[in-house]
Length: 433
Image 1 (cartoon, rainbow, N blue to C red):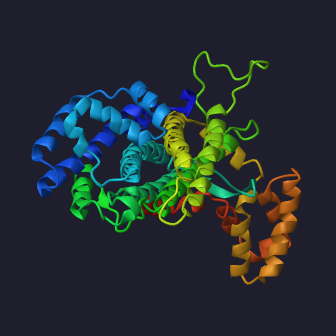
Image 2 (tube, rainbow, N blue to C red):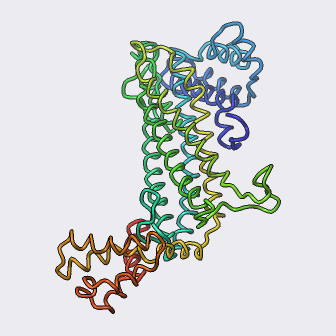
Image 3 (cartoon, rainbow, N blue to C red):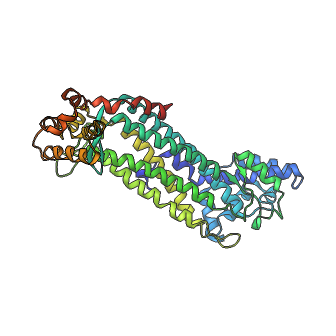
């Protein structure tokens, strides 16, 4: 991933130094388990741990060996042997490369999941704070981009909170599904390694043994993981798109924070553009794009091939690094979001009271007017207001059929904005408990 959209903690998970450290721990834990089972000398396992744990693996040296042997795990094991000495002959006993690679990838994805879960927690905190801040701040709700009925800005934030709370639940499940360990040897039969070694290593690494591996961990697990990241990205885009619409000049109910010294356009000094949420929209597209190749990785040849390998070397780092950055950016946007209640009220009033049309329709039907007739009565009074010719209430008061069915005081009461916010407390209790 490019540095522009990367944060150090997530990047470090995918650095060669972390990968080789995990490879060593897999091999060293396996050696310990074999020593306990009497497969290798205990002194050898102790030496492996003692020398390997103090080593700083030379990435350049490993790369130079790989350039010759054309095999990354063999290159690492060769370098490890240079560090450990003669006892290195007991390393990798009965294992195959996929045991190390797949188990390592599981560890890295678990590490990445923990950072992403922490990211979501911070976003949830920001959304909850803004939701309660604007719990009763009225604004117009829109369907098809057109004014519909009043809502509150707090409800918009509460909806996003609920969505990202579901995202968190999905990611926890994806983390659990990906957290498996496979040390079953060639074609997954445990012919050359005791299954108890896998159990031991899994426990040490905080994983669970893969019930049945075919030399590789089944890729449906990875497909689900990256699909979950893709759904999370879609939720990011949904909220980002909402903010972009609210920042449009004609709407301007909310906008991204514009810092001192910031410039919006190289040509037009007046511009304040929603660049962060536009950026988030693009990043979401990238994260979603990684889900498809992960699904295509599920169908490998027989017990294994490596068609998935090149894909995962890219999508593992890129998907998690990009999503980590996007969650952090979105949290910053929400935290500093500029909200304009006065503009929200102005937009609410823009259509001269038409946002209350459903209340009039229902009141007429409750007064005995047939629904089709009531709809026609309300619509014929609404259309002139839509054209900017006056206030909805004034037209209704001049309509004999309306006044015959509804008393004037009751008609005026139907324009109470509080009617639309009477269940906000209930909705908040459902979302926040």
